[in-house]
Length: 565
Image 1: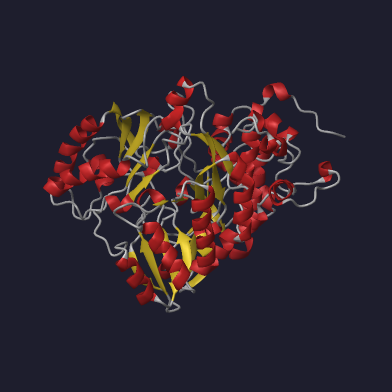
Image 2: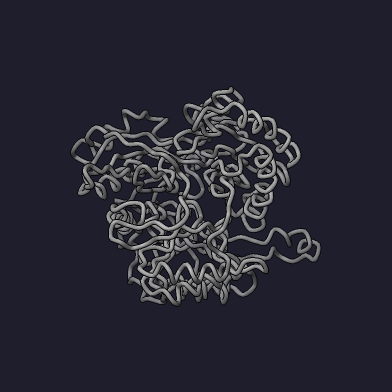
């Protein structure tokens, strides 16, 4: 008996997913349409499940309207990369595709994934086929499914890295949609005779109510911002051995100006599981969300709202019921930082890993820095090196025995070593303008300039070496995790930002709105006396975010429902 659904009560996207024939939609027809550089409206939703976002160049918007031309459409392609781990050969393949099919750059994302930007419709299929040739894919990199699973990035920092990465990879594989639509549409594989007979054993025909994000952290490093994830696993090590994972649930940062019921939320620690139980726990938490998440209002559809609506105690009990056993009590852990630690680290296996700073996560060549060329040469000449993307938009050249060769190449191009302020070391910026359709203001293109101006203030007070987490996004959706920053900027309109203060250095506290709709000059005028006060009156070892809370520049935000824009 077929399911009876009252579509009038559900969001429009629910109907699109149901009618998509397991994520096929009319994508093939859209790709074949020569009249427009866009795809059909419904297909823009379906394509997300294939790792694709339709965008247009907003820098050209006014001129193209004047000429009565359609927008300059192009596509973002996001590559699924569990734990951010890739090989030198795969790096070279992505480097080549960026030049031949995209805008010549690679974007390293805050979810440890690659993004290609500026891919036009006629090159979409060839690009995805090229990604597949590198033994990579874009399945479920976006859409209402589990997305790229993050894990601790630097092998040199923990002997548990390989184990934690395997968990991320196993969870990713287990939660990948089973539909063959991706392989049919992009890789020309044979169509299933009756695709309605396909079964999505976890997701069902309508998939999840909203996107779902999972990460695995190794204390004391919170480099994946575990409390921002829908579901997290915190590795617990005792006497050098992994004994299991504390489980966190309910994090998420998407929010909306002017809608107080849409807010960022930090995850709660809900218990402890053994290593053998972790994949099962991931599946059952996803199923609880699939069965109970809000499908009427997409702004209330994330797991964080399910937990706040039904209660944390209810959620824990429901997860235990789905599991058929109870999660154990959580074990003690401590995080000391959520930023990356730069430089060489020697792993317990004797191999070396180098964490490199990549400003804004953008890998490109400029007149002053041949970053893309340098990394290409490392990939070509250092055969044993892994290229591991970090959750802070940086890159680890990892698990190599050829430390000296890597250093020589990077030094030749002046990529490493470099002198960075403590502020610049801890930056994150989303893409924002010119391609993101949601952005109200600049982020990636502007944050380096803003950081330079704040550095001038810090230098006056001998604070250039002081590490401070600073993040900027072009809108409140939270892609750059700005709500955890000690100094956070969220674009309100072109050239104007809301200023948030009071996150902490280890990513365990939301920040708080300080002032709204500030210009650059106003931001600097607000920060100048606070920085001066911090230089003069901070306690020993006190972080900037902790200081502004103690001195009551802002009040501490203790839970998401108290957050305001």
